[in-house]
Image (cartoon, rainbow, N blue to C red; front, side, top):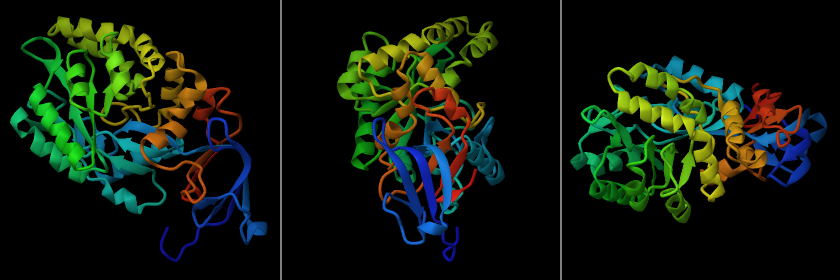
Length: 366
């Protein structure tokens, strides 16, 4: 929206889900912002009806990332639009080799919180995705990406060690401690890709803020996560690909393949145990790379399948996720970013798969 354009006055009428237990009958969007006070010009407002949620959050997404690394602007735009049409209006981009800052000028695209580019050990991640470095350079690269990102840094905490033939931790404890301390000094939080068990204790004791995937959580590390308040983003729609990956690597890396199948087999049990222990759980799809965008509804349904109560699974992509990321929901004066549904998503999270209307910055865009 250009400087001379003014967003129309909108009236959202029905059931406005301000919070899990706070419901209002209506809100207004004026100049792209939410108000609960009837504004001047209300008689000419466009009225939309339904069940309103704050714009959904995909807390692990990759705009600007394709099968072989960075993609062009047109492809990045298509990715962001696909997420938007699914109701995802806030993305935590968990690592991208592309510069997507241009999207910040587009009021018709989801808002993105960036973690800079992945930081991985040399030859220990997908080619073309990450900075590939050795431990002695970790602190410097974390400082660099902390300054390039929007308050997050993304490490690759484990990956297959080809000599060992299995998943293994990527970083020595001392370097991880120093790198996380540097990120925190610069005001950034740190997250890490981790499939397996081995890297988790060192990362958490070093002060990490979040773990992506977290399939390697066990009864030994779950209490540690809970005690430190370390969040997880399970990306269950991505973990569903583990059997196929294991089959493809069976001949060359049988130990790794067996491990991947084991992690997959207990994925729901792992997530439910984490939730039961009080570990914060948020919804993320891992879209980008090899996985399609627009899958946030499927991820929330997977959280419910894992045993998380529907209201908490909904919060993992709505109120709770926005609070965790420091972004407002349906609050007075907040950007009018919301999604309307025909039915109550608290009663059945599958409703998220069929948004009726998408409103971004006070404009109906879907």
